[in-house]
Length: 209
Image (cartoon, rainbow, N blue to C red; front, side, top):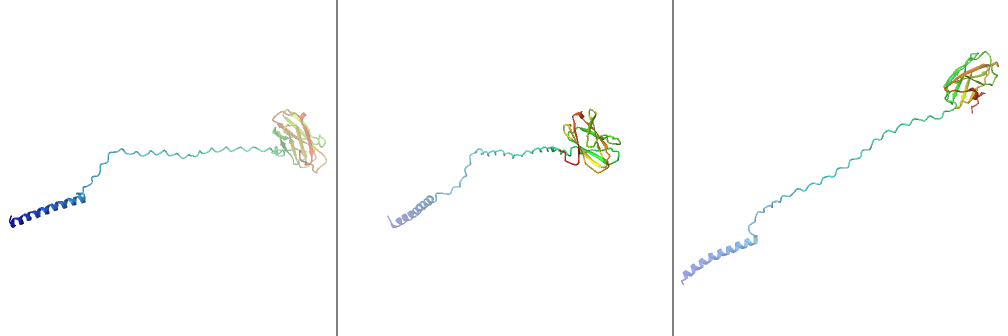
């Protein structure tokens, strides 16, 4: 073989070597870089049933306090009456022959007295001093008679609950010694008998017991 033939053989071998080297280099780069970068595809989620939201428990209603009914106002119980005030509204002006101011307040603890009026005495006293006479006019009416000297006076008559005890209080006062009768007529809501009445005339201003 001639020299020119060897030179042409070497020249053909150089490009082949270079091509092979390029192929090897490209394969190495591909191995190192992991090949061309693939665009990731997002996975399609499987259709899933929605998770139901928990049903909230019903709210406990706030208790509304019941409106209390107003308590009935108790009616006041009347206090026991003072024996000296039970019948004070019953006041009677007593007729007298000297035209003096003489009246009597009736304290009725029985509650049975319907009315009280003055009788009409005579010119002189028919009863001795210190005497109280009780007589029936009818089944429900009593006449009380006593005497007093002329002059203004304020008397009191106390009648107990059983209509069996009468106390007439006649304060002492100055005046003529000649006595005159005083008469009081009492009407009751029930029958009353003078026979069963203990009647007392008390002079002075002592408290009735």
